[in-house]
Length: 392
Image 1 (cartoon, rainbow, N blue to C red):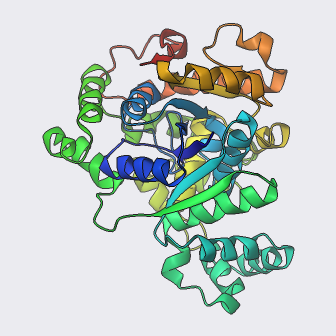
Image 2: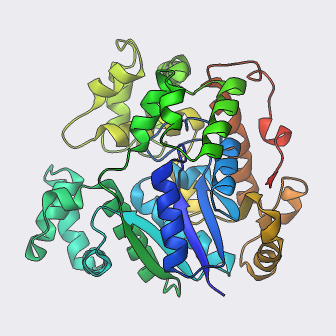
């Protein structure tokens, strides 16, 4: 039996995602689709447009059979950590036979060639040497892979980047999961464009680019909570930067290489987080990396957390279709990690470090709702316990 795994954000779920899921399921001849999805915050260092429960409902209504969660710490990290954690979890389910990911290239052989090169110690030494001389990461990668004559645009495309990282992670873990890549349609609306429509209250236009049920879920969720906006967390960020010592800020993930000092230097003069990030940005420190660093400070995610738990220590189910109960039962039996189908008795199932990670997830959800436009639920803590697993 073929079981397809997809790692996604679905922020929000649109027609391009539906195309990828449908084509991938056919390509893998899969009986079921398991989606591994980030929670309430993204790899770009932002809150998702709606919460993970609304996005889980979208996925289940659009072809997914089970949705599991990529824990916060990995979902908001670099592409390499994001992909490593995702492959680790798919391996740990014990049921996934295939993984499909989008790419601008659509050429699995060429992506695999680059992934193999980037997995070598020699190439990685060249990259680190280039970065030590002040080169931005992607420039150092391009220079180190000059013998492969990689086009700059190719290595800098977001879906190609993640595709390469997934292939590296599959190789590193000696995974039996079979990779498939689907070329991203050039005329497909980007999720960022869809989010802009939502921010500008153009929901009717946004719905034209989404499956009908997903559009309805989006509209209903926005009516309840409102859309999110990182700027609503600006004063919390400023307070933490002003009151924390630089040495403590440096302990936060991505606050290394002089970033903590620059945040501390400019935090008083900047009018908002967007202006602060522009002040902190340098040729070496990209805007997205700095936004992740700011988010990690807000959520208190430290570099040391990764040393304690370098891989996700549990599998948390966010939702499933009743028709997939047999697969869920098989996953619970086959998984090499504890499977959480709800939070009840989670502490008894998890190690101390795993439970600490889950608590951070729960706390981050409360912070997420602070970024929502409709704050009617903001002051009720432990929102995770008020939300149930999604079953359709």
